[in-house]
Image (cartoon, rainbow, N blue to C red; front, side):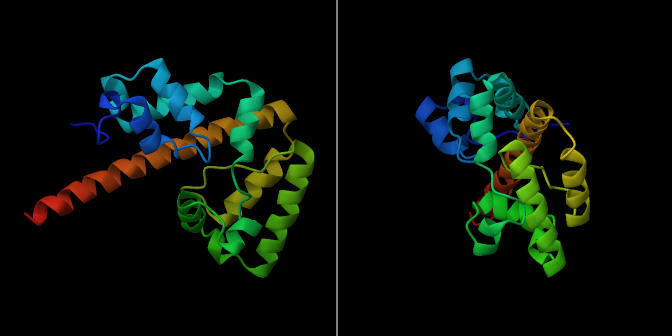
Length: 187
């Protein structure tokens, strides 16, 4: 069984190329990719799992202020930026995949109330890797996580962000593989 490989291979990229290619994996936080490259890339990081784990460890090892900056770079779920079309392409796809673009007015109002309560309690947005979830599960998670302490919730948000990054790397591999197949058919 072969393991998916990222193309071009991260281990063969100079730093600037690597950051240009993978700096968007963590929402508006290319420093995660910079630090991952500085730690050293080998063949294990040429797979989505290997690169995801290295980048996740960079975020886990970061000081709390840097972690909070990454958390705060994320948009509210079903928030004003989503409604106004101000999300990154990745965030737009992820939120739509969970059905957040299909909320009823009542659900949108509940999201707004929970986003407000969450930000008041933690001073950062609620972050959840929504792939495989629906808006009902997300609303339930909101209510549960509001009970966490600020430190617990910061750590939870970091792990959710790392899950998002893994999903983004996996999607990029799938897109790369599909693109390579499509281009070879034209020859």
